[in-house]
Image (spheres, rainbow, N blue to C red):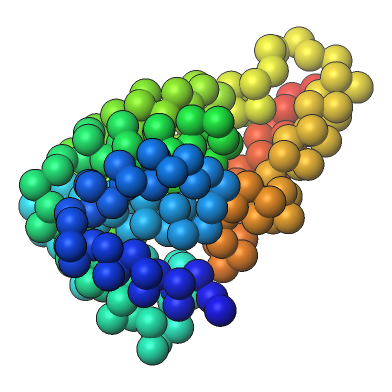
Amino acid sequence: MSIWDRLEIFLIEARKRTIGALLDALAARQQRRNEEAFAIALIALSAKMAKADGIVTDDEVAAFRDFFKIPEKQESKVRLVYQLAQQDVAGFSEYLSQVARIFAEAPSVLEDVLDCLFHVAVADGVAHPRELELLDEAAKAFGISDRAYHRLKAAHLGLGEDDPYLILGVEPGIRLDELKAVYRALSRDHHPDVLMGRGVPPDLVLIAERRMATINAAYERILTELG
């Protein structure tokens, strides 16, 4: 049974309560590193994020569907959770607090959630200023480090002038052997198998691939500077 099949249980609960109340229940049960908890949190926050600029575009909805590889027969379930979250009186900030509580003991999962929110924000080809504000708010609520946040921004918005040293969390002047050690550690931490071990659904391996591409690019830039 896939994660999307198991959403049926949560849909039954969601019809009785708001999505916000459902997230509270998940936090109370301490269902951490749980695929269902991850999916509900992600759908709820994505729905609020997509509505941040005042318009929910077909591109944003399609990007959510395509990115998460939702089987066609399960789309109606996911869309219902999406719509319930948009209609919920709870705001984005309240959802952030609930999700932070659910994954309080798994901070790396919060980085994964923020990574997915970046994808939703830029799905229509541009990151609206309000969406960027919400991403900043999410990073603070989740306690995301500056290094991790810049790495995510670089992955979704392009490296541009982003500091490769900040992305890797190293200082200019680092020795080559130290740089290689940091790179190896980051490669291990962001391997797709590691993400799935944290409760991220297998369909979301694209998160790891994009993140690793950013890490690789920053690493190559520093190698070039070191000669």
